[in-house]
Length: 430
Image (cartoon, rainbow, N blue to C red; front, side, top):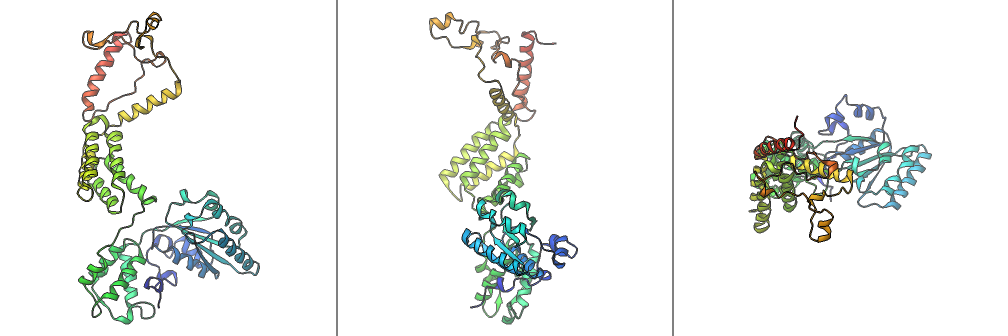
């Protein structure tokens, strides 16, 4: 049985690699180094199917070195030590070894540390591949000994080039089949590949297998592309990048961008309950008292989804997202809360002013608890302007400063007037 098309069509030299022009263009530093045989230990960070394994093999070829490949998913520390021992022995014989570790972020700290002395001694040229941010997933000691090269998703246009090459390659590809396929169909496959060359070639191979009379037509494509899924890692960096994009789009009052990112996350399989919770947080943190209805709507949308489920309940989350992005924003409540918490931590257990203390017993009344308290509803205007409610050390502190947006415009007018009146009543006005 022959290898899959994606494996058979793996580039044999740098000129066959599609995409990654920033790293592999004729004048790019990495390409010049590889062509000169000056290889170095590196981390290749990029999405699936962007060429990490291919580049590692080409590094070994350019260095005229032996190539070993390990998978961090399948390999344990004993196998790592065995391979490192073989590489050390080869080094003693004057042979170079490129050790490629796929999904290197899945190795724990101890396993990653095992490579360090061998990288330093030059026994191996270490090439690690990861789909996750190395800053978070790899230890600093390993990162300090490797250069990080960022690979990008391959464009649809470049994937089309790879598909055409496979269609016409008589030796490794599908050229012997004489397949007929229109440019529009190739573009559809490339778009469905979603930046992943391997996926694109796999889709093309499936289409070739089920095509009738050697013609990949619309009917064939509808079967091949029916259940395609877009890239989304529910626990990886893509997840956090996308929720960040959703939150910041709401904060920037861009409903079009916000609903797009919501759709992307739901399409990728994100838990709707998580999105409902994050949207509720936005209602509190980013909108706050500029539009108190936002919180009510968030709770209602969350409850609606719980009752309706998907897909009907997704519309409730979509409408909430549009509303949150469209209404007035204020983080004044958030700022006030942080400032109050900071004073609590900074000043410790400040005493409650005597006139505000509860006095349920004769002893407490005799000690002055509640003495001098003014009951505001009995005061003209409904507010005892000269009454101080903060601890003495914090008298005059202002935490809440409403912004001039939404409902907080009215709140600001009221509080500004009230604070000025209080200052005057206490003799603080200039």
